[in-house]
Amino acid sequence: MSIKGALKQKTKNMIHSNHIYTSITVASFLESTIIPIPLEAILVPVMQARRERLWMIALMATIGCIIGAVFGYALGFFLFDMIGDWIIQTFSSPEQFEHVQQKMKREGFWFVMTLGIAPIPFQIAMLAAGATHYSIFSFLTATLIARSIRYFGLAAAVYYGGNKAEELIRQYKTKAIIVLTLIIVLLWWLTTQL
Image 1 (tube, helix red, strand yellow):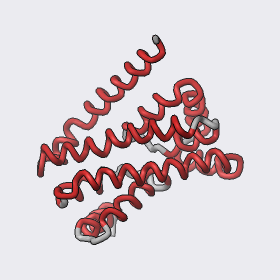
Image 2 (tube, helix red, strand yellow):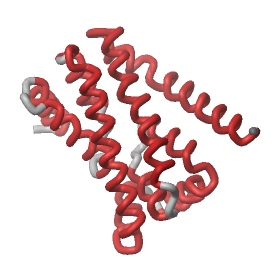
Image 3 (cartoon, one colour):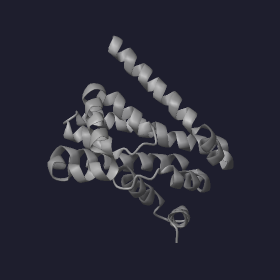
């Protein structure tokens, strides 16, 4: 069975499961820590099939990501010397990781916000935040805001778009990410001017 076929089957199983919230939380945790596959591929069909649980599904996806963010931060904070090279080689490159570390030191909160909204593997940001000993409170606050925007935004698209949500998301995803990123950059710039 192909990866796409396996993903469709897992999604069907999740839709009809009595453990839908646990499944969404675990899937979100895995997506934010180990499996760099966008969770939207699972969330949107599940949200469409279970509209009565739409907002709770978004909440559980956010919680799973926050748990994953704590895990990733802790890896960077406590174990970077032991496993950092392996993680960098798996999800990135040494040059990209160095760039991310410098961004964390200079722009921290706003950098995490940008990466949390964009469909970019979040693992490197978590590891860099921990490795640079960036404030865990600021890191988790930025992660919570960014991932809430992402997952509750999907829920809103399903709520208003119904069965056309996937088509709308596909059509406007890049534009929405660009607009949100520009808003975050503008807010970051405004805070530096105060």
